[in-house]
Amino acid sequence: MAKCVPVAFQMLLLGATIPLLAARPLWAQPLAAPLQPAPLPATPAPIEPAAFAALVRTGTLEELDAACAQVMALEDRPRLRQLQQRLLEVVPWPQSLDGVLANADVLIRCRAPQAALTVLDRYGPGPGPGRLQWLLMQWRAANSALDHRRAALALERLTANQPASLAALALPLQRRPDGTVVTRPALDVLAGHLESRGFHQTAAAMLLAAATPGRPRAERVQQAVALLQAIPPEQRDELLETALNEAAAAGAWGLVTDLLQAQAALPGGRGRERLLRLSPRLDDAYGEWRLRRWNPSDPRVKELERQLRAPDPPLDPQGGPPALLPPSRQGSPAATP
Image (cartoon, rainbow, N blue to C red; front, side, top):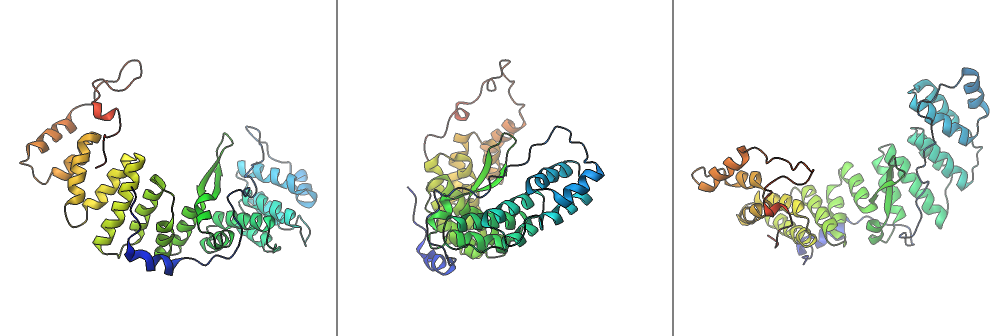
């Protein structure tokens, strides 16, 4: 179903590929530091001054971690700064790899990601699982510090010479209240870092080179098209066609509509005509009206305006779908646009 990336982009993909430096697969690698916050009572009480002073002098890493969570909950910034400074010194140098990772993890949670990068710089592990953990922690710290250069560099080294592993490696972004971790493919994260640094062509090349089919590829091609503002309309249309085929095959009709709208903005009428055919099947009266409104003499325009002005149908008292719901809203379109 999916088309290949246009031939015109082969040089782009080859010329913009980032050099990669490591050498082992990452699909089964565990995540660095599982983003475990210290538990807190519902309303934490302030730490007594004498107890806090003793904690800063002699507290362990675990005790300082708990204290950080407590003062952050109370928005006590002066004490938070004292704890952050102490966390830079609590583990004697030179540190072991485990000590460095634990120390950096607590600093990230204590809102001091730049200090976490300083701690990580104290250790340079050789090849092996320890280096993977160190690079993942370095990415977490740089990402939290909005240091896009170091975050991108950590991911480049993490997935060196194996670009396919970027899409397969899930990076932890945050932990939900229920304990589950929100993740995102490293490929999309790295593209975001590169975009933030102004390397739009390199980011687009990475997104276009990804092989994951269906909706993920459609969304990546859509993002790449947005990054490649200078390409000719013909090449833009060809890329959007690739994304449309992938989105339609996955049944992602909302994404199909977005892609058709982007295609309709290009010279030529193919995208507009296909969007007009799709809108009635999606029962998208507003979308169809936007395309037809330039011809007010068209009877269909008047019908669409009447539908848009009509009040919504009443809700079923049992909490079901709206009464008299058109059949086209009860399922996906029968065919691709």
